Amino acid sequence: MKKKIVLLGATGSIGTSALEVINEHKDKFEIVLASAHSQFKKLIKIGREFQIPNLALTNSNIPKGKSVVAENFIRGNADTLQFLDEIDYDIMLNAIVGSAGLVYTVKGLKSEKTVALANKESLVMSGELINYIIKNNDSKLIPVDSEHSAILQCLMGTARSTEIRRIILTASGGAFRDWKKEDFPKITLADTLVHPTWDMGNKITVDSATMANKGLEVIEAHYLFQLPYDKIETVIHPQSIIHSLVEFIDGSLLSQLSYPDMKIPIQLALSYPQRLPATADFTDVQTLSALTFTPVDYEKYPMLEMAYEVGRTGGSMPTVFNAANEAAVDLFLHEKISFTEIPKIVEKLIQTENIKQPDLKTILATDKKIKKKVYTDYS
Ligand code: NDP
Ligand code: MG
Image 1 (cartoon, helix red, strand yellow):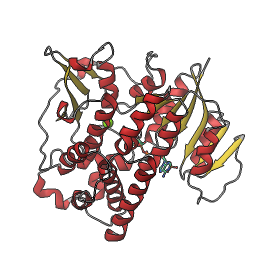
Image 2 (tube, rainbow, N blue to C red):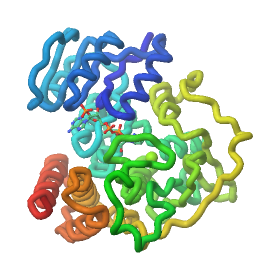
Image 3 (cartoon, rainbow, N blue to C red):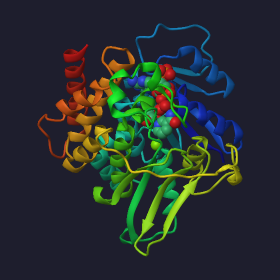
């Protein structure tokens, strides 16, 4: 029996890698629904190539195109969410970028499906609620993020979390790893969009450059592995070969290694707990001449420190952090603000009042309110 996959964000970087994995394992997986936000033509092409019966374009403002080949063509978030109740599927791969992914993660988990999660923003915004849903439903959350996939793999066979001393998330250091802080005011958009080791969508590439991405991943790890923040550390590892480490109480460190290629964690999330033959290239260890580590300079990367702070505060604060960052990054991508303004904006916004144990409605309202404030004040 093939596993039925819902692929959200099929036109993006993760979506494209997921399609390569699924294409390699056509006997194991079939896509029953694929979504895009605006790239109508690309979605149609994917639909045709993979013979996908249901296609969804979540941005309802895009004009309707011709020659739709799918049995069902859905438009807008509300109709897509409703349609998910009407179809049979096993795994939702959520590769939507940003807070727009949250309602889908919640939908998949409430429907007792397995959610393979690339959309880290949903766990950052709503980790407590998501863990509550998982506890009370027969649903599973499997990380796609490479660091979290590495930790999951290192923990296979570990029965007790009390045996974990700490986890260490590795970070490439992003585009400005070798820049001095004094030179940051000179940073341009073009400088930022060149990532040293990973080829990714624009938002996460900027997040890597500010290290907000590692901050989001610290919060993601806190909820996924239910560990306190003082057991979650980060280190700069420029080669992106060691995807994270777990240290156990007996002093053993385990890690997972491979060339940086998202097809590995995507494939594992779809086949978990089994492993399938590789879609990605095998790693030639003879080529790995040096694997190096340096501590993170928090002064250079204030977003990472802020992420720990909002994570520890909890409540609606991680949502505020995420929303402010998302809006600020969007303004930077449209060249409305400079690179160094991103952390300044986020720092200002996280002074907002915290709401404890927010429900989904409050989280979504907070996200909207914070983004509106950033766009109004800085556009
Ligand atoms: P991309 O920007 O490449 O792709 C984003 C996808 O989401 C596209 O299919 C896009 O559709 C769709 N999308 C955009 N906005 C919306 C919206 N408002 N509602 C619904 N769908 C939307 O992003 P990535 O693939 O790089 O990242 C996706 C997620 O995975 C992010 O959360 C990121 O942090 C995470 N991730 C990514 C990694 C990577 O290597 N790229 C690694 C680890 C995690 P359209 O193309 O039509 O605009
Ligand atoms: Mg990652």
